[in-house]
Amino acid sequence: MKSLTEIKNDIIPTEQHKYGLEYHCFVPLTINNEKVINHFILFCKNTGLLIKYDEQNKIFNYEKLPICPALSDVTSYSFVHLYDFIFLFGGKNTIRQERIKKIYKYSMKEKTWNECKLTLPMEISASLAILSDDNTNVHVIGGRNIKDEKEKMHVSVNVDQLFEKAELLKMIQELKKEIKILKLERSYTIPIEKERMIEDEKKNNDTVAIPEECKKMKTQ
Image (tube, rainbow, N blue to C red; front, top):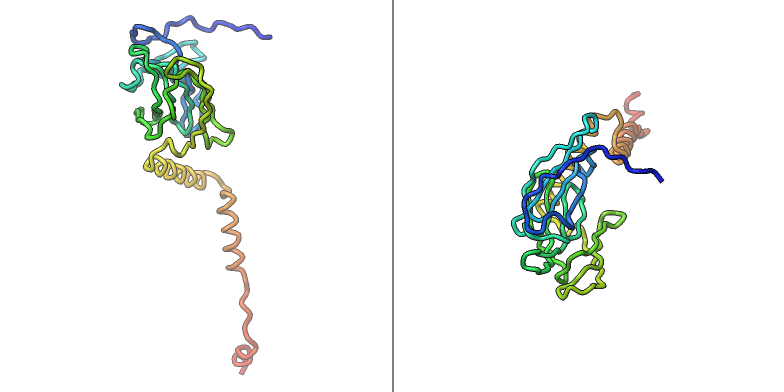
Protein backbone atom coordinates (compact mmCIF):
# COMPACT_ATOMS: atom_id res chain seq x y z
CA MET A 1 0.00 0.00 0.00
CA LYS A 2 1.41 3.38 -1.03
CA SER A 3 1.95 5.92 1.71
CA LEU A 4 0.65 9.48 1.40
CA THR A 5 3.04 12.34 0.74
CA GLU A 6 2.39 15.82 2.08
CA ILE A 7 2.57 18.34 -0.75
CA LYS A 8 1.45 21.50 1.01
CA ASN A 9 0.29 22.46 4.48
CA ASP A 10 -2.37 25.09 3.91
CA ILE A 11 -5.41 26.55 5.68
CA ILE A 12 -8.65 26.82 3.71
CA PRO A 13 -10.00 30.39 3.99
CA THR A 14 -13.51 29.53 5.16
CA GLU A 15 -16.11 32.00 6.39
CA GLN A 16 -16.72 32.11 10.13
CA HIS A 17 -19.60 29.96 11.31
CA LYS A 18 -20.72 28.71 14.70
CA TYR A 19 -20.29 25.07 13.65
CA GLY A 20 -17.34 25.48 11.31
CA LEU A 21 -16.71 23.32 8.25
CA GLU A 22 -18.38 19.89 8.34
CA TYR A 23 -20.28 17.46 6.10
CA HIS A 24 -19.49 19.59 3.07
CA CYS A 25 -19.86 19.29 -0.70
CA PHE A 26 -16.57 18.82 -2.57
CA VAL A 27 -16.55 18.18 -6.34
CA PRO A 28 -14.25 18.77 -9.32
CA LEU A 29 -14.83 21.80 -11.52
CA THR A 30 -16.11 20.79 -14.94
CA ILE A 31 -16.34 22.61 -18.26
CA ASN A 32 -18.62 21.04 -20.86
CA ASN A 33 -18.93 18.09 -18.49
CA GLU A 34 -15.15 17.49 -18.57
CA LYS A 35 -13.11 17.68 -15.36
CA VAL A 36 -10.62 20.54 -15.09
CA ILE A 37 -7.36 19.23 -13.66
CA ASN A 38 -6.59 20.39 -10.10
CA HIS A 39 -9.69 22.60 -9.86
CA PHE A 40 -12.27 21.84 -7.17
CA ILE A 41 -15.42 23.39 -5.73
CA LEU A 42 -16.22 23.41 -2.02
CA PHE A 43 -19.56 24.37 -0.49
CA CYS A 44 -20.43 24.25 3.19
CA LYS A 45 -22.93 26.52 4.94
CA ASN A 46 -21.78 30.11 4.25
CA THR A 47 -18.53 29.09 2.52
CA GLY A 48 -18.18 28.72 -1.24
CA LEU A 49 -14.73 28.27 -2.78
CA LEU A 50 -13.09 27.41 -6.07
CA ILE A 51 -9.82 25.73 -5.12
CA LYS A 52 -6.98 25.65 -7.66
CA TYR A 53 -3.77 23.74 -7.14
CA ASP A 54 -0.60 24.72 -9.00
CA GLU A 55 1.38 21.47 -9.27
CA GLN A 56 4.55 23.14 -10.53
CA ASN A 57 4.84 25.63 -7.68
CA LYS A 58 2.88 23.55 -5.15
CA ILE A 59 0.57 26.43 -4.34
CA PHE A 60 -3.15 26.50 -3.59
CA ASN A 61 -5.21 29.42 -4.86
CA TYR A 62 -8.71 30.21 -3.66
CA GLU A 63 -11.55 32.10 -5.28
CA LYS A 64 -14.75 32.92 -3.42
CA LEU A 65 -17.95 31.63 -4.98
CA PRO A 66 -21.49 32.84 -4.30
CA ILE A 67 -23.41 30.83 -1.74
CA CYS A 68 -27.11 30.08 -1.68
CA PRO A 69 -28.72 32.26 1.05
CA ALA A 70 -31.17 29.47 1.90
CA LEU A 71 -28.22 27.13 2.58
CA SER A 72 -26.02 29.48 4.63
CA ASP A 73 -26.62 27.35 7.75
CA VAL A 74 -27.30 24.03 6.03
CA THR A 75 -25.00 21.01 5.89
CA SER A 76 -25.23 17.21 5.61
CA TYR A 77 -26.78 17.29 2.15
CA SER A 78 -26.05 14.63 -0.44
CA PHE A 79 -24.81 15.82 -3.82
CA VAL A 80 -23.90 14.93 -7.39
CA HIS A 81 -22.44 16.94 -10.26
CA LEU A 82 -23.51 16.65 -13.89
CA TYR A 83 -23.47 18.83 -17.03
CA ASP A 84 -21.57 21.58 -15.18
CA PHE A 85 -24.19 21.70 -12.41
CA ILE A 86 -24.01 20.67 -8.76
CA PHE A 87 -27.19 19.29 -7.20
CA LEU A 88 -27.72 19.30 -3.42
CA PHE A 89 -30.39 17.04 -1.94
CA GLY A 90 -31.96 17.72 1.46
CA GLY A 91 -29.73 18.64 4.39
CA LYS A 92 -29.91 19.93 7.94
CA ASN A 93 -30.09 23.49 9.21
CA THR A 94 -27.48 23.54 11.96
CA ILE A 95 -28.99 26.58 13.72
CA ARG A 96 -32.66 25.56 13.76
CA GLN A 97 -31.83 21.83 13.84
CA GLU A 98 -34.35 21.24 11.06
CA ARG A 99 -34.04 18.92 8.10
CA ILE A 100 -35.16 19.93 4.62
CA LYS A 101 -36.45 18.13 1.54
CA LYS A 102 -35.64 20.76 -1.07
CA ILE A 103 -33.20 20.29 -3.95
CA TYR A 104 -30.88 23.10 -5.01
CA LYS A 105 -28.60 23.40 -8.03
CA TYR A 106 -25.51 25.47 -8.72
CA SER A 107 -24.37 26.35 -12.24
CA MET A 108 -20.58 26.21 -12.57
CA LYS A 109 -20.74 28.28 -15.78
CA GLU A 110 -23.11 30.99 -14.60
CA LYS A 111 -22.08 30.85 -10.92
CA THR A 112 -25.73 31.02 -9.92
CA TRP A 113 -28.01 29.13 -7.52
CA ASN A 114 -31.57 27.98 -8.14
CA GLU A 115 -34.11 25.93 -6.26
CA CYS A 116 -35.47 22.96 -8.20
CA LYS A 117 -39.23 22.62 -8.51
CA LEU A 118 -38.92 18.97 -7.59
CA THR A 119 -38.52 18.05 -3.91
CA LEU A 120 -37.69 14.87 -2.03
CA PRO A 121 -40.66 12.95 -0.56
CA MET A 122 -39.51 13.74 3.00
CA GLU A 123 -37.14 15.90 5.02
CA ILE A 124 -33.81 14.09 5.06
CA SER A 125 -30.14 14.68 5.87
CA ALA A 126 -26.95 12.63 5.65
CA SER A 127 -28.26 10.66 2.67
CA LEU A 128 -26.19 9.33 -0.22
CA ALA A 129 -26.75 10.54 -3.78
CA ILE A 130 -25.31 8.62 -6.71
CA LEU A 131 -25.77 8.86 -10.48
CA SER A 132 -26.88 5.90 -12.57
CA ASP A 133 -24.36 4.52 -15.08
CA ASP A 134 -26.07 6.30 -17.97
CA ASN A 135 -26.44 9.60 -16.06
CA THR A 136 -30.22 9.61 -16.48
CA ASN A 137 -31.20 9.14 -12.83
CA VAL A 138 -29.99 10.17 -9.39
CA HIS A 139 -30.50 7.66 -6.60
CA VAL A 140 -30.91 9.22 -3.15
CA ILE A 141 -30.43 6.55 -0.50
CA GLY A 142 -30.79 6.42 3.29
CA GLY A 143 -30.14 9.26 5.72
CA ARG A 144 -31.74 10.59 8.87
CA ASN A 145 -35.35 11.73 9.00
CA ILE A 146 -37.12 14.57 10.79
CA LYS A 147 -37.05 12.56 14.06
CA ASP A 148 -33.28 12.07 13.70
CA GLU A 149 -33.86 8.37 13.07
CA LYS A 150 -32.17 6.28 10.40
CA GLU A 151 -34.35 6.26 7.31
CA LYS A 152 -34.47 3.32 4.89
CA MET A 153 -35.24 5.39 1.82
CA HIS A 154 -34.41 4.96 -1.86
CA VAL A 155 -35.66 7.64 -4.24
CA SER A 156 -34.89 7.64 -7.95
CA VAL A 157 -34.94 11.12 -9.51
CA ASN A 158 -34.99 11.58 -13.28
CA VAL A 159 -32.23 14.03 -14.21
CA ASP A 160 -34.50 15.83 -16.69
CA GLN A 161 -36.79 16.79 -13.80
CA LEU A 162 -33.95 18.71 -12.15
CA PHE A 163 -33.65 21.13 -15.06
CA GLU A 164 -35.95 23.87 -16.31
CA LYS A 165 -37.09 23.65 -19.92
CA ALA A 166 -35.01 26.72 -20.80
CA GLU A 167 -31.89 25.08 -19.33
CA LEU A 168 -32.45 21.91 -21.37
CA LEU A 169 -32.93 23.94 -24.56
CA LYS A 170 -29.76 25.88 -23.80
CA MET A 171 -27.79 22.65 -23.34
CA ILE A 172 -29.12 21.34 -26.67
CA GLN A 173 -28.07 24.56 -28.41
CA GLU A 174 -24.60 24.37 -26.87
CA LEU A 175 -24.30 20.75 -27.99
CA LYS A 176 -25.23 21.75 -31.55
CA LYS A 177 -22.54 24.45 -31.47
CA GLU A 178 -19.95 21.91 -30.30
CA ILE A 179 -20.93 19.53 -33.12
CA LYS A 180 -20.61 22.37 -35.63
CA ILE A 181 -17.13 23.21 -34.31
CA LEU A 182 -16.13 19.56 -34.57
CA LYS A 183 -17.22 19.50 -38.20
CA LEU A 184 -15.09 22.55 -38.97
CA GLU A 185 -12.02 21.40 -37.03
CA ARG A 186 -11.91 17.75 -38.06
CA SER A 187 -11.25 16.36 -41.51
CA TYR A 188 -13.82 13.63 -41.09
CA THR A 189 -17.55 13.95 -40.65
CA ILE A 190 -19.68 12.76 -37.78
CA PRO A 191 -20.94 9.22 -38.61
CA ILE A 192 -24.60 10.15 -39.00
CA GLU A 193 -23.72 13.10 -41.21
CA LYS A 194 -21.29 10.93 -43.20
CA GLU A 195 -23.95 8.32 -43.87
CA ARG A 196 -26.28 11.01 -45.15
CA MET A 197 -23.56 12.44 -47.40
CA ILE A 198 -22.88 8.99 -48.87
CA GLU A 199 -26.57 8.53 -49.61
CA ASP A 200 -26.72 11.94 -51.29
CA GLU A 201 -23.64 11.09 -53.35
CA LYS A 202 -25.22 7.84 -54.50
CA LYS A 203 -28.33 9.68 -55.60
CA ASN A 204 -26.26 12.18 -57.57
CA ASN A 205 -24.25 9.44 -59.29
CA ASP A 206 -27.25 7.34 -60.28
CA THR A 207 -27.63 7.34 -64.09
CA VAL A 208 -31.07 7.94 -65.52
CA ALA A 209 -31.99 5.47 -68.27
CA ILE A 210 -33.06 7.18 -71.50
CA PRO A 211 -36.12 5.57 -73.06
CA GLU A 212 -35.52 3.86 -76.44
CA GLU A 213 -38.08 6.13 -78.13
CA CYS A 214 -36.07 9.19 -77.14
CA LYS A 215 -32.86 7.62 -78.46
CA LYS A 216 -34.50 6.98 -81.85
CA MET A 217 -35.77 10.55 -81.97
CA LYS A 218 -32.22 11.84 -81.44
CA THR A 219 -30.76 9.77 -84.27
CA GLN A 220 -33.41 10.78 -86.79
